[in-house]
Image (cartoon, rainbow, N blue to C red):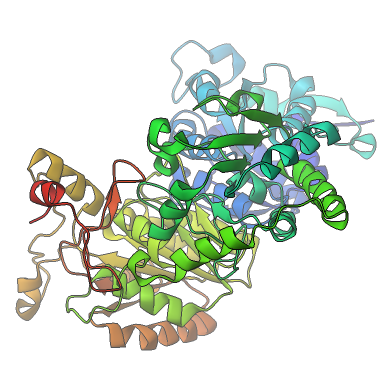
Length: 598
């Protein structure tokens, strides 16, 4: 046993639990913890410019690599409330992050002390556990429980609030005998997998819907093995994109109202049986259950018992970690194949592949317009970045179009906040990814509004040498909101353009408002503005050279045409194709066109 400050016990537990990186903003109420971090020098720290940014950095850090748990730290009051958005985003997507907040001394709680707020109560709805530790001796056990909860069952975030005097108090603690608590993950049984495969055997046109739970469980390779053994095509969700490579013959496209492929929707609608693994039937994927479920049966495999039947009742449900389930699926499928008991799916696979290859199911990208159409930007990105790139994005038309036109070839190469979609997420999340992996090819993608929300965090990339490429597609609009406002016949409060008094006279007519290049350079990074498609590849080459030389983020701002409507709809069988298809023909129904198009 050793006598130490409770704050030191917290740091030692984090070390034992594998923490090597934290993101945060010091302050008076959390300084005792920072003092112990300084003394130990074992956990690297990145100073954020906004505490919400620190929480999104922690998210990016976790999402980048299996086993990571990002840590974000802030002082009391507004630092904690600033991090609520990051906790919500992490909770929604089953991402474990640990949020540590400083608090007023215990004697000052509930006395309206400066920056004192009941952050544990505020955070409870968006965490697996949120607690204010009132007894110094309980600090090490609170941290032990936090890591146990974050890793067990459906992963998710935890908040620990530490009053100042609790951090400073002396306690007895023996770190040498400390061990993490065993992680609990439910696992499918052999009987359940046999029944599921029996149900699948009776189907003529089955699909697997692969969710983000497969990526969380580091089970993408098992998913591909299962698909190849059974010959069942796979539709990844947005959070599961990359579980099967985009160029795999069994990749049947993404399904949904927005972030989808036309052939993905068509393949889902042609199916008669769906097995969802590690997914939550999100509404942007399904649309209404009446359309999504009609004519097909469902199996749902998920680690969280309350997800089974939450959106609609499956024909069969299995509560299991995705890896545990897929290990058994692969084992049993292999046994059945050796015994000649797996159905031949080749005709169904050929049908799905035919839609993927058919020009009428492909959207057009090869536009030569200036200002550029976003479709051509993504075509250029596919050509420039190759298969080993990792994309980071959050929300808006830029992200929706990215999901329709970009390609992803492996797990954790599409890092996206799915349910929460907070603007500003992309910059800090990309920095968190870079902190987790200094070597991967990393490209962030933002619209101009998302970029403006938290662009101050670029200074973090400059200070701590966290280089990556950030593509900003700039139409000076809240593009997604503008498009949805057409249902209200308005274009109101969504224009970002204005005459910048600092813009040279010859540029004023463009009226794009914020000069992103100057702002980025002022934050210590590099930036390039691009107007034509032939300028994109040279800009990327220049960005890579600057990153190698200066080790800072490089922003490539691409000026888009002001208004481009991106394909989306109200149901998966009613997606409006605003632009021409690859075959050169549009398919916008007349009534919808009259209501929604110029």
